[in-house]
Length: 328
Image 1 (tube, rainbow, N blue to C red):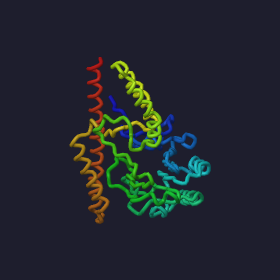
Image 2: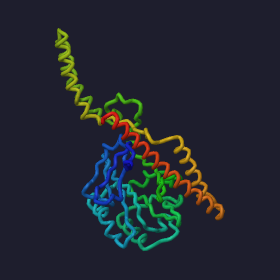
Image 3: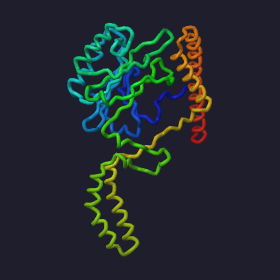
Image 4: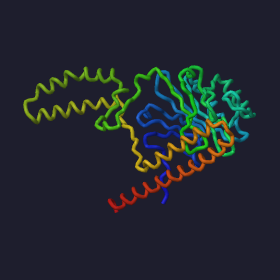
């Protein structure tokens, strides 16, 4: 029996299906995902473009550029998007498979020069800072993952860095903060408060107040005219039905889901050990010690990956067994 390959439940995944697995996707936290729209006209299995419904809108894209002699062709979907939409606020993450000193790669190749020409021709800027390699594997390291923005969005990308957190991937985790004018409306949802039905922090309050003011006197008169219990219940039902306007003014409240049934204290300890070894390898200056530490890191990383798979498989088997017992 295998285990389901899924993304974390607290995220909504935006991607384009294909006969083979898509090579680009965007994961947006579930509680804010309703604010994003996938632009199908400009997306494909290697390029995903979404728009955030702000004023002005913010466009976010993710691309995979395969390491072949087809770079110009592979950039066509994003070029079509840029020339058609002309986004003023645009953040673009790439697995570029290109090397250039512009993003602090110690070497520059032909693909890197072509990509720099493309970015320059469309007025796009590199957000990367000098903070270590973005790709690590036993044969060496590379600087091939890039964050790109428009001029209007460049100042909004802050604290760009390469995380030391182990990702079980050859690509290192890239983190940065995005500041917006709507920062004060950031959702702070309490995971334990499941009685809430609407996200009132980001609702359309002016529209809600308008509806209440227009109907308030009618509801008051309706209650005042009631003389029996049956009439009161009928009035309350009518008022409650009229309050359905709140669904149009506020998006549904979606609490965070952080519980992972397969996670265990053992996995937590191993993950901390993997991250500690990764930091030790990165900071080590002695080549002999670095080689020894790197070998230990790879072995522990493989162990961590195996334990993760085993924990997920065991959890999935347990779930299937219990489901079968309850619903034979």
